Figure 1: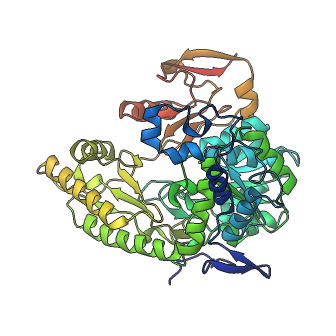
Figure 2: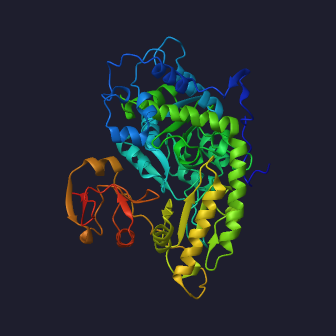
Figure 3: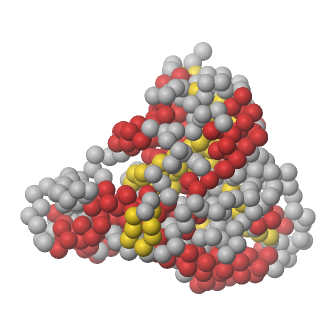
Length: 513
């Protein structure tokens, strides 16, 4: 198996259903939490607790038919003896989390039922007791900005590398992080993203060295890389490269249910496990979904026992698809040619990004035609690119056949077009200067002004185009003409913007005065 350039191999790769971790055998064929739920339902217990559907007996018939009786049967509340409270000790729930830690190579892992957004907020809260100053990659997910606001952290932003040809943002380099830490004396953590939406992987080992040389933990939003641990054909995982706290959005590619994720603690001892535990509790519901947690338990089993095999099949199918797509007029793909560019130490092939610039139309138009002609729905469309995401275990060949067929239909529907030279991608404009901490702007005195009259004002809310959810405006930043024009364009092309109270963006909240 090959490993993509620039990244290290996992310290303890998961090689089969039973592995040795710290001298102890770990049986990944088990799903202790899922099995405990099934056993509870099998006993047909008296359900004199929530939820009100009582295992399905009180559920809407249409919902039962659509979701299946088992979904209601296993929808069990927290604090049920033998499931998430003892005996036994450790409980099946804790056993499941321990197995996840072993599978991902973590010192400890926490199941998240409010998605990776909960993980980003918990990460920010977990480090707040150490101090306020942090160094943050500017193009983090909007939920990290939410975490900065909730925790009252004061960021020094570090820019990721922008590809000179493609115009898209890649990852932060160790040199850039090193310089940013120089500008932020007293910083208590560095927060970065790897891999990106387009599949670029950072030199996490280098970032960890830059942070650790100053005694600062490296916190990695690896939401799009939960699968990296399980194949030698992929970039190495952040934990295996020395990251101290890592977020895995397991539902995105590994295949748990939507809104489920895991937060992993690294082995370096630079982040307080008790602080993470408190932060996870603070940000989660007191009525956690058993279905979400069970899906994490099962997804871990699948990844740990068959991940190498399944990912190999998917990667091979994607390689063939990229060849077919590149042969279509006006289309190109982003592929392993990205690796080695500034800010790209490795590349994740499970994102299929198609460059449509040569067709003379936009990614938005291509995506709309794929939906209209073939009911094909994509993860992301921008002015110049479309992105399709593939799961670790979903049969890739039939899906790819449909995707490539839909692209052929689009090319035919566009008719004769002159093959245009690939123009640069249109990157978002540079962000405005940060005039005040995000929390102060978000919670301080505000006023509402027309969006068209907001240039030069200090934003009091975060604006993030979705997808990918990277903030274009942060609370505390000056609103620039370029940024306002970019957001208008995104909306006109059918994009969505998260964070604004006025969803139409006719108005915007700014700092008063």
